[in-house]
Amino acid sequence: QVQLVQSGGGLVQPGGSLKLSCTTPRFRLDSYAIAWFREIPGKEREGVSVISSSDGETYHADFVKGRFTISRDYDKNTVFLQMNSLKTEDTAIYYCAAQPWGIATIRPLDEYDYWGQGTQVTVSS
Image 1 (tube, rainbow, N blue to C red):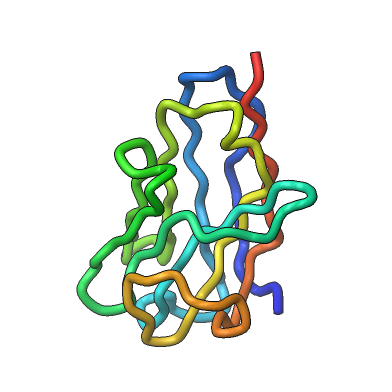
Image 2 (image 1 turned 135 degrees about the horizontal axis):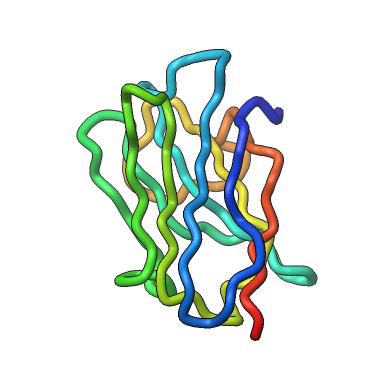
């Protein structure tokens, strides 16, 4: 069910940065773990990063660790994914997803109640 609103993304050169945002006007995100997934054509959707619902603990997949940072702004009811040192292999459609009372682990896709509409990130020279 698409109820999260994503923004950001676009075209960037290798080594560049982008920032994705995920929010909703319908409910507070505080009680949800928010994860970012990405989908490359021909491959399964894979988990990238997640921030827990309670203590702000975060997890980043090894392939983005040290380059991507997930964060939460409670005032703005928004979760961000700051992506630095982007590589061509980061090119994908990125989705945010909300899991009620979740912890900082990537869960199976069907455990997420709400999804964003997806946003294209293209890393190319």
